[in-house]
Length: 330
Image (cartoon, rainbow, N blue to C red; front, side, top):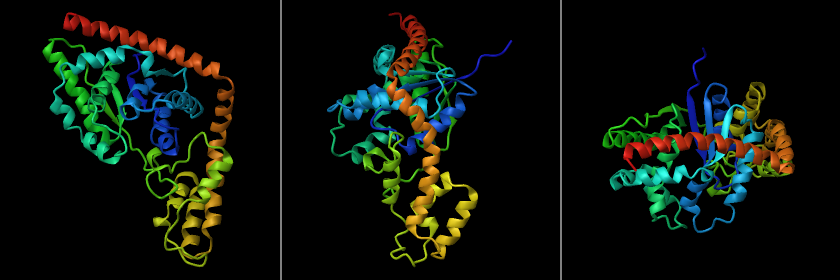
């Protein structure tokens, strides 16, 4: 008899359009995980409210685009449960119940709490929802009792808080409702944006999966290069060039080696170098664009996948919440 597959859970906030950083940093990893694990992937639309509560006008559209990007990028609804957080009210109920027993000091020590407030100064983040979002995150995870949660090293404190809440709940109510999820450490590559900084929606420097081919090529044309190359005849240093970082991701080793040599001797100019990487990137994105176009035209297919995934997720979430209610005697 075949043993059941271990479970993985992960989610993404629909705070903007998905870009190459999201794709290479998370979606590629999810694609690999779904071949080995029982995967639950959800769009965390309630989490998007923690920083976008004042303007929710685009969240619903971002949710739809994110689902299309997931499916076009290789997430298979036959091998993964795909759902939307707000479709499962048990997330909010468990969040409420866990918040009753969460010490405020645990939330205030969250390393990203102060960092985000400093980083996003244009928004008022002195809200209960922003302080307490790690509790909602813990509820998201614990509802499905996953064996593993894919995280990078910088996200380990968030997962540790989830484990602390699981231990605290089990201890207070003398029950073994929540197993402690383990980290599935993932190396998230730092993808450079067109301005040379980390690719990020907040920097407006992204290449999005939903961009057209002309838009991708135009963005790459404007991408910064080695600042020392002022003139075409100036030799460059690929190690300092954001465009070369794209070559290392998308170009075959032979082209990488040739660019490395030609840039240092000024045998190739930045315009030609960018065109070469644009050709490789477009080649990689073409299959995604083809599927995106079909899914955009046939929205009912996306709805059916989300409906089915939400039904499966709801069954698991309801069962866990029933255990919680029994343990708490409510």
